[in-house]
Image 1 (cartoon, one colour):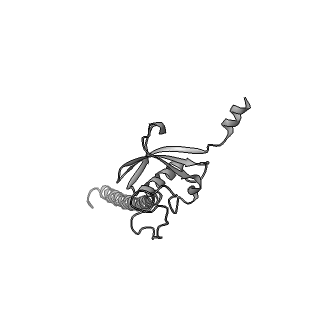
Image 2: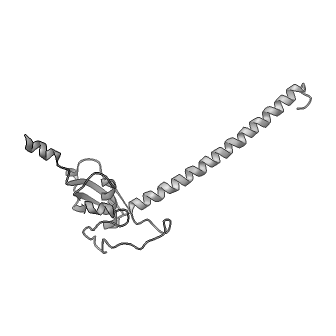
Image 3: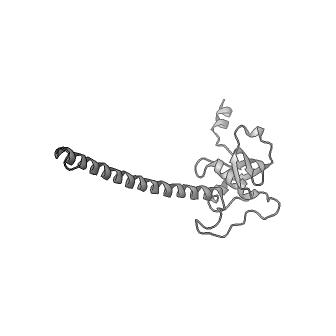
Length: 167
């Protein structure tokens, strides 16, 4: 009885996801070894690692089970989780280039993003800026509309009080 309870109490040592990528198209079975709760999302870690290692335009986690995943197994060490924000973890090299080398630092809005995380961060910043601008535009529009209604109401009352002589 203790054997079953002890095994169930053990933390997960690996987490797997089926990752589909485009530009070029590929499917991978991503295994995060030594996965622990906390830190970056495990799915995001796999997506980022597969996109970086394969030089893909986009990657996403496929629905369904990993047992249905027909791609090659790519292993990502959990220790790479702390580095995932800056560089991709070391993975088997894709044909045509060295992997795991840190890229040159760039300004946040300069050039294409290096990782999916950076792309998401930029998109969130752009959305935030657009929402602020839209809110300011709405506030200004509401203010000018309120002034227009106020002016129209004043003119209407002046017209009525003067028995329609000042209309």
